[in-house]
Image (cartoon, one colour):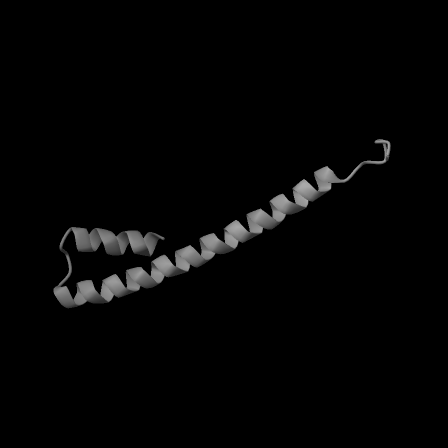
Length: 67
């Protein structure tokens, strides 16, 4: 994430040539895709944890009468 912020900052400040901008834009796009993949994995993990938690809450405990 830090590298992506640096790339954006350099491009916004005009610190790089056109060729460097194109190269850094591509690198930035690659980093964005990596970040999206990490976020997607985190979301899937959270969904699995939540589903397990909900399933555990739905199970009757030994103290509850069964019908």
